[in-house]
Image (cartoon, rainbow, N blue to C red; front, side, top):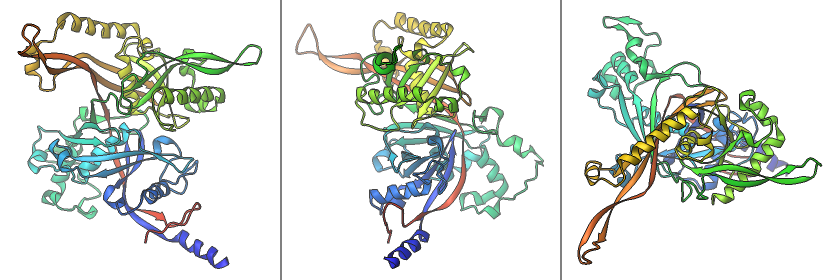
Length: 493
């Protein structure tokens, strides 16, 4: 017995090196692992690698790379596209995982908009997306496009990334760019001026820099366009076929007896299954006077929100999960215009900023009159949306075949929207377009049953959304994973 105890202590100091990359993506932070590095291990061992690397389960994740909150406990597993995916010009495929802080679990059911930014930058920096030298030298071309496939939700994303940095790098190290550049090749101190002016002023144009709420300093802008974000997990955009759904939750009556009351919520799946709850549903709740910490300490509120989330899970046809659906508290913003106040609840904790996938679900819900989100827009902005819809309805009472012939995607835009979400750390701008999908169908002519007519019909709506973020590679190298955990003895050899 004593020998076995000593042996286990030895195993605690034996570690396996797994190649990894540690990135900040937007306001999140996570680990990027290569699928080929994990392929030789069972699913159980793959989960052990990720949990050990992030330091879960532990509320501080002190023994790993995690930051103790859901936005800083994420992983992306990347792989090269297949032949079929390359036909779609996909540059990189990735699977996102939400690593639980307090439990030994990883959920792969949804995507993360922030970490998508990191994966896009990884594809460029790791040269999975090839940059041509002539494109880098072309000073009129500031952006390049990386096409991503999020395998969790089968979502296609276009990322437009500033390449001015690579132009500067090429200028500094010359022809060495196309080879493996060593750190010693890049001088620590660069001459700030040269014959053409300030190097750093030429590195980025002002409109290519962005400062995110919750991230210090300016960074090059990465623009993400998520295509066809509706129905990522559920079968319908509105799984209950309702813009508002009543959910009954427990409450205390005036005589301190437990009763029930109805809370009207909007259940939507557009980029992320979300539950939008108005703050008016709770007495004396005003997000203008709240912080994430104060909401987390409000145990009765958190219990009610978790009850709403669990009942929404059933109504949306989802399997039980701690990460989805997300609950979002919303109310009208005192700033008016296209602003809306919103706090997101993630893994039973109030998000310190705002998840990108929740932002896309929020703006999607705002496009449908009668949802909780639409009802909490300012009257001025509602009129802007209503005007667009009136113009669309009056001009397009029938499907125009001339339009169909000019539009390869067979889509006709109804709305073009932009919202500013006021969240705990500042604000987030998100853009969306709502389309009607128009399908060509063959039908028999009403005059002659032997004649087949081409008919164009409106099938359903599709939604695309755009956000602007930034990313940074923090560390690359080997993640050291213990061969032994407190739960069981696992060996990689």
